[in-house]
Image (cartoon, rainbow, N blue to C red; front, top):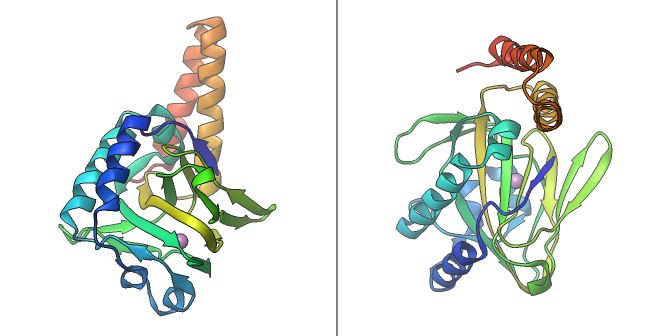
Length: 225
Ligand code: NI
């Protein structure tokens, strides 16, 4: 799991919120299978909503310029971002995201390797609504400032706790990674971050060129494009 701060600026978030506050939300069960529908209780913008597509494009543009998102997700294709709203006790019980999704406009399949939730409200605007992600080390609770993103493996079971005050508004989407395996992806991220940090201290010595080559050769071995 990785917290990526400041994916959107405060101004971008405020503009999105203003436009989302005027929009029509629909039952969130529209985008899940029968198992998810039993535990899902929230509202979403329709998948084909022109507003959703426009705001989603702003998010995709922001992500394209975010080196940490690139390094962590190694994105091949990302689904157009969706938007959801939880209020009045709404929640989403423990579930796993579907493994394959279609981009509505093109029909292209996307394997969901990495899930992202981008917070569009600040933690003090609502009570509850924590995203709880379960992995082999236990449960992780996530509630981030507006504009920040949490990235987590789509292979994990997760849930959203009931929102008992205010409203929790987020964008969420899935990415097919060039590297399918969670462990390999996290090893590449760790290697890249260590190289970046060493490079800032030592500059481009021959060993740094060797380590960078090692990163790229691993990526070449493991990527599927
Ligand atoms: Ni989910």
